[in-house]
Figure 1 (tube, rainbow, N blue to C red):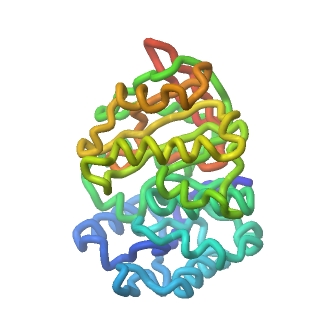
Figure 2 (figure 1 turned 90 degrees about the vertical axis):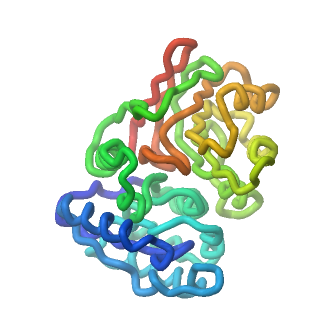
Length: 309
């Protein structure tokens, strides 16, 4: 199930299922509002988006109410998160998935929002979108690439060829070709869904994975064991391919490190690509959780095409 594409004039609702608007710098907030208005969209903010507590978030009931209200409102065509954080998974057992399925809308965000994106897809079949937060559009790092990738995915139909930004270089870790349905986002957050009713079925999927360094010098070790944990989930032995995003410099995670990490973990016949434009770095693409992708990777070139979104 894919929600209708955006059109100029549509209303976009900003919600705060993790951290809230009080954590967004005022300058970034101002620039983000200007972006949406310049593109012709009408921006509204959820009732509790600035409510805050000691966790820089708001109560579970407030966050659930805001998400339900956004999906219930027929004027809202897209729901976008203001920030990531650490606690979006608190909402999962309180959500009305029937309400969401009966009112399909675009839902977009990344990082901690990975829990919501994958859970809603798993429970409803609604394609969700790993992409910019509201606040992302308030920063000025290669904004044209992020904006164009967002528009290509959410305003247009038809296949999208994912061309690397100036900051990115695709590295083929394993050669191969595949087509499949995308699952993924932030690895450590996705792993929070293991053993719950909100974990997507991994059978025959293509994994898009990234992570951020909150472990200091131990990041590579943590990433290694988190990936191993995901690959132990039932059905993971049938995955068709993996695309890794870009990682911040502090992660110390490079193509050769990834190659060593996946050795003996991933079947040698499936394509594995490192360095695509998503993660906790700018610029970034928008890709569909539950949409389909084609990957063709050889020693000289890697091509990634989003087929349905």
